[in-house]
Image (cartoon, rainbow, N blue to C red; front, top):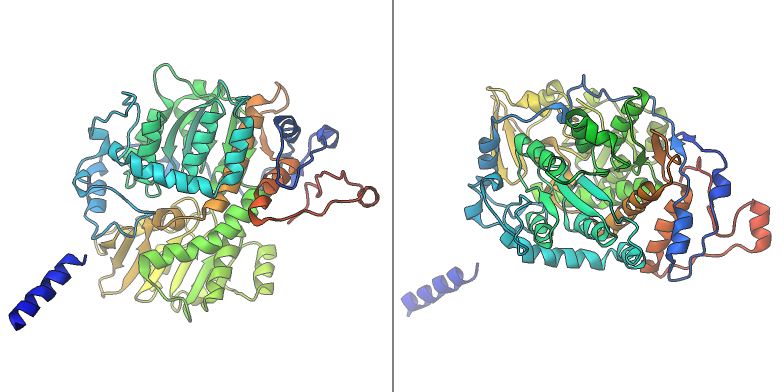
Length: 551
């Protein structure tokens, strides 16, 4: 009987497995906007939102465009394409990758560039990991739509008028279920889209497959090499019989590629919409040098992007990314957050809430004073580098954490980046013969020093939350709605409204985006009386704050 019981037990075990530069008479161009309690608005009202946009003065600190040799200036090479793909495929598990991955392990050995795939429409104008994953991706997109009601509402209201009819949009963003909702909204509004990824690790393969199956030309997969990354961008831009007239960028790589490789195409672009700190810096640098020959919209500095995507989103997603990759317990850990902008503020708040001892590094005295008032000690990184358990960068700069500082970190320290580009941590300096790299799980590397010390590097210094986890859908709905409105505004603007400069979204548009999302919380705005509006010198329907107001 004992043998029988043992056999049954085994069977059971086996079975169970900007300073603002305002255009003249902007205030006069703003017309009244009335939003009902359920945030309904017709397209006539929407057109009042899409009015003249104030420009933003270039920031004083400039990031070098070419001399710094950032990621976008490294042009494709053949070397390393296979080796990187193989190193990623040899990861012990993919269960920690961003979102659920439905990739068949048999697909890992073959680069998507070497495959011939066709969607249900008979088209092969795409390059994704596996088109057979489309059904899974469609389910994820449908789930995302449930928490992006405002964007879906905008889609339904504007769909009949097709405000983007004739628009040929080339996009370079993270390709996730939430981005797919934005892309399909743009298509529903009349646009033709070609899309690629702005990050080699953030693409959800099944979502890319679903977009390709629906007819969108997508060139992206999780785990691209540098060569693949630039090849995908080029395939989006350089295609016979199709020429883009609008750009939606995240990080500036697509904009720079077109500017450098296809200047004649770039000059015919009607507008650029950029959503990242890094990309906006690059646009301002082009503008300052007199090389920006098309109008651009700075979405990153819109209130709805800064406060919600950068602050609230990172406040939640930083913990998600760290937990999924390292299983770290935060209580009592000493953590340095480099940069106390909106992203840094979100990260610090989350870490403090879980009991971490948080330090902040800053170059800006105003941000530094804010950190002090919020209860954080502001230090220089070198002062505490030997004692900290974790470093998180979120500055948008380069070489924030150097090799010398990495050498002095203690065993078991975690290093990661919450900025857009992989320039903040000097990862290149770690690829030397005396250091050993050990891939322990997807997006997690142990860098081992000769004395046995290990430093845990996440996502090879790339954006942590979208490389190693996911981000809240609701917050991305806010950003996506802002991007859609910016594209509509730039594409439909009469000639002469926008010069060859970088513009901010008007306050009216920010308020409209926010109002669309209030219904989710059953929130009811208080309305000004005529007497109150007159006392404050405001229109009863907004805008309620001047452009220089800091929320």
